[in-house]
Length: 157
Length: 157
DNA sequence: CTTGAAAAGAACTGCCT
DNA sequence: AGGCAGTTCTTTTCAAG
Image (tube, rainbow over all chains, first blue to last red; front, side, top):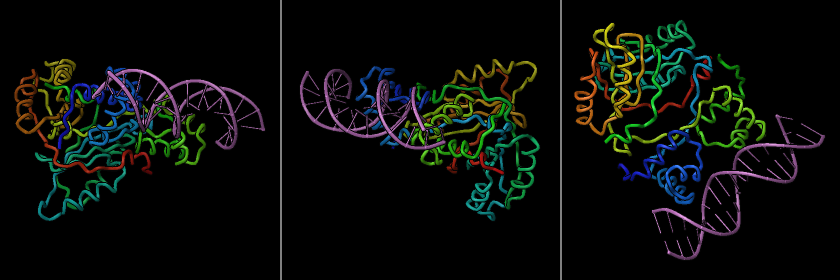
């Protein structure tokens, strides 16, 4: 399932994590390969599924969404409410950005985008707390995220 | 601080969230603009900082990192250990992918990538629990993440 | 904003080491 | 595997309306 990658592949991935629009020639220049060699490796990484795609990154604040909240949610009647139904209901809320099913003190972790705190309060009370099966909910409001270079774990020994 | 965007801008952003490699011509075709018009809008969105960049998305499992864990961390002696020092120490751990300072039951939320559960156990016990100032720690192991279309909140009424 | 065109650059292909 | 040289296609960029 997991592909075998050499150091050059990892260097290519690191370059594309920094800038997903780099051309094969630019990537090759950074990792010491000619344009065709870099291009063939990039294509291989995409075909193997190591590179899943490239996505623009937006600034939520510039879009008017200044508040990010992480929610931990426990399901109440664990046998009763179907997790699939619960997930579907969550997905219908546009402010819910991420729905993660997790193992631990909570059953789900959510990431919610809101315009401000009162907007978040509205979403939480009227959309999320009212879902069938919702038990305990924990909120963590994002203050500041350290910008880390992406995928450093790739190079963990 | 937040830019004014019309519906066409939002359509452009949605297109680029779906595929960050779309050319101005392809974006224009999706939103009903000519190539130069789309190109100017995209450049403007980048200059305003609405589009922060484009990044390749990798499959961690294909890279040998099959386990993702979310940690909630409370600082113990809140006045004593400097948050800046704590963050610096976290950043030195390559498996730590995200460090978020949050308001709520926990002071920090971390995202950690590990090869497997025993690898995670090693990281947690030897790298994270040993940091000065660490208090209570909560772990949530990612089971499954619902793949949501990105940035639907953009279109929340 | 559009069309049209020129210039530049990127993707892709064979062939060779 | 990688490099070189070449072709083709796309993209950018600049006109002019």
